[in-house]
Length: 363
Image (cartoon, rainbow, N blue to C red; front, top):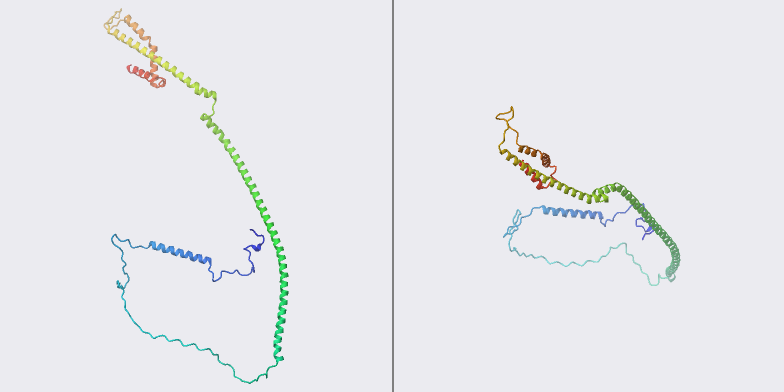
């Protein structure tokens, strides 16, 4: 509970503010001094433990033996199993009783004087009763005055108490009003602070959202084109017609071209085989013609042992037959050179390549 009156605050000093602040009483120890002493004791114990740990100790005895305490003093002392005992006697006088303490008698002061008075010589009733009456009357009057003063004092106390109670009730009402006012002010302050915090929080949240949105827009402004380009390069965005051509038409076209090239190569290979067979036949016929005897026809002015005549009609036919396949042979040579250079390796089957290499080796 928060009080509005400062008199309830423990930090307010009551009494004379100019008086010196009293320190702790001599009989009460200072808490700081106690704490320092405890810390010093702890440090001493820690230092003692460290010294005990660092101090070398006697090694453990070997198996079957044990350590025995040995005297290390300068003067050795005989240690026996039985303690030597010696009896000594001594007689003293008995204690005497203390004498009784004598009575205290103070010393006499002054001189002793004696007189003789008979009965009735010194007694006067009127004279003797007057002091007693004065005392009784005075005591009675004093008691009456005290009672009257007490009644007046009680009446004054009741009036003062009544006035104090009225003043206290007024002060309590004022204190209650001030406390209620302070409580309302505090609640209003807390409510205003909460509202201000909510406004600041909403403002910061809005600023963060706006900043995040602006940052996202700026970031995506540069990111979206690159993402679209990468997706487009990866093939996620494509033209249906182009994709159909790439996936359907081009593979079919390449397959047909490969088939056509394969058929062409097969035809060329078959043609090369036919040409080779014809050439081999012509070559065998030519060799057979060379083995036959030749006829020499002498001419005018050109006779002699080294003269040669014209070839027979068979040789002319052979030469004509040899001159006919020059076109196919030239095609075959160009094809072989292309194969040797690696131009048609991808479009020729392995059997066709081996066949052509065998033909080159035979030539």
